[in-house]
Amino acid sequence: MKRTISTPDAPEAVGAYSQATTNGDVLFTAGQIPMTPDGELLDDEPIAVQTRQSLENVKGILEEEGLTMQDVLKVTVFLDDIDDFDEMNDSYKEYFQDNPPARSAVEVGNLPKGVGVEIEAIASSE
Image (cartoon, rainbow, N blue to C red; front, side, top):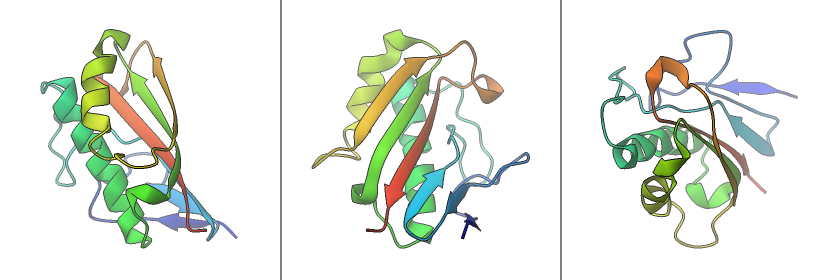
């Protein structure tokens, strides 16, 4: 049975979506942009900072369900400029030092609110 997840440790959903959903075994986050839980948009910050904030949002959602970054099975990273890959990756690996999840990283035309990165994750409680 699907259940929606909401936490004050990530930005509020600002549309017809949830921060995350779960069936009790698998959790899917919505794409997380570099916005603080208080609503401060970090779109003018370097990609390293934007990546960390996006992953902090993912982490906050996971923690709401008693999960950690080690429970993440798959991550998708959307970049507005693939040339930012190395900088994003340097920050990204701080969160996944051991047994990193599968990952895709793709360049897209535009991201919400003009940010440089958006990150979504799939995690499992199993």
